[in-house]
Image (cartoon, rainbow, N blue to C red; front, side, top):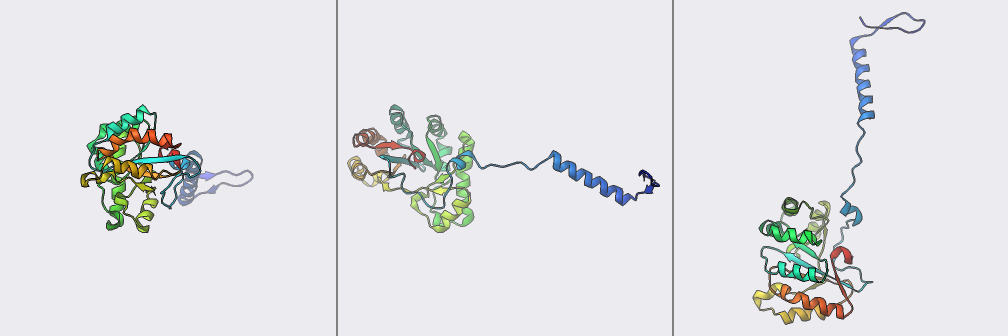
Length: 251
């Protein structure tokens, strides 16, 4: 029988239950002292650029900046020409890529990262999101993010662009809950209509005739117009007093 000795008192026997209780209390206290709960911070990109449930369609209008963004869906025609022009002009820009694009053209994506360009989420397979279920929307965002992480070890957060601009309050709410803010555009350059007869001259006019502080322009990697026109667009835009910047630079 285990006994406790107290000064000036007789020994008092302790039951097995009491001894076990004391032992477990002791272990609990030790666990609290030696294993405190860790402090978990959100990713640095989300701290520096806090999310909002409101869609972005224009940047900071107080500065003479315009934002060129390039979407990469399933085809790549102009990316390397665009990257060369951007490097020549010491310019950073923003790409919204699908998971299909990332997995099909991994070397291009690595070039984008190494050059310091921004890469964000354009879903995995470029669907109409308003026709997708809640779960399918989450899978589309996660699929692209996993493809990008596996290719360049980088997250696609915190921004995404709905394919075709197809979104509603439900899509935006689900994306926001998953850590993404929607980015639309101020002006669609319509370069994606090249196969329908859209010309370089028409795209040039759309962009240069609409220049305004904070405008976000939508261009694409799957046509030749964007690559053929970019050098001229940069030169003419700067002549008119504007600077072309990336999304984060222009917000």
